[in-house]
Image (cartoon, rainbow, N blue to C red; front, top):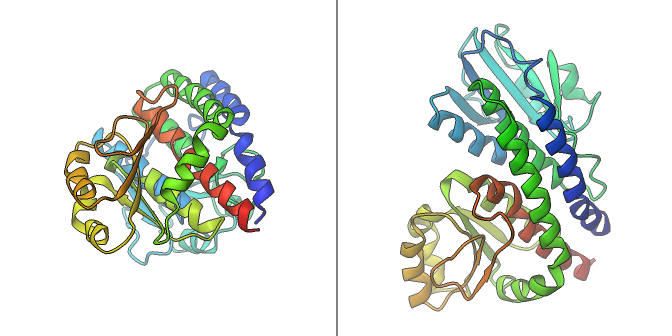
Length: 321
């Protein structure tokens, strides 16, 4: 992995997102590949792919669809038989756990590869392919491909519900402008947030359940690049699993706004003097708030907010290379 390449990959986000928005405005990539007889969907992946899949599946279930998201490494994959579509996601197309899972599926299921690498191994194991179209990531970190995975799974949601992709295309276009704003203004906000969030005991990230992947991916970016300790948590669950560390550590918390449970979290962080930074909305008890264009749209938040942590991680990585 290369820190300079990671920075370059991040700076390409706005342009690549604009292209994706144009693609989605022209139509839905899933229309030509999803069989008409699909009744159930299983999303398979590892790491960032699994993070995106978890949120996408929850969104689809909330709208009445039968969808599961599973780690490809699991031995407990759903065996739902005919009428099941398996979407296997791997940006590189070579995740060995995902390839193994495809080999363990019942013969009756249909399989589609969602990948950023045409002609890769995963495409040989599936009957159809949807291209993430995120361009090669020269830094070796799944950043644009994670973002495009979310967007393409939202497009799958549209297809299964019989909706067009106009609204999604608009959200992706707005995400491109939000990303450009964060990149252009980085020197104004990033040093401040880095100072507040990169503490001696590591960094914690919280996001609402419907955008939980943002907390998971943000923490991964800090671990994967600069190799800093970081943990993602769901905002409501935070009071049950993470609160304990506020009593014994120099606790630093990045909160992606939008959970109904932020006030409960703030009761503990405020009383114990923890450092909290809010992104994308007002967060009670935050020492600093970072806003960006479009952060009043929840889909734009989902597709944009991880860039904040990515830019912090990139700067920290460059500093220790």
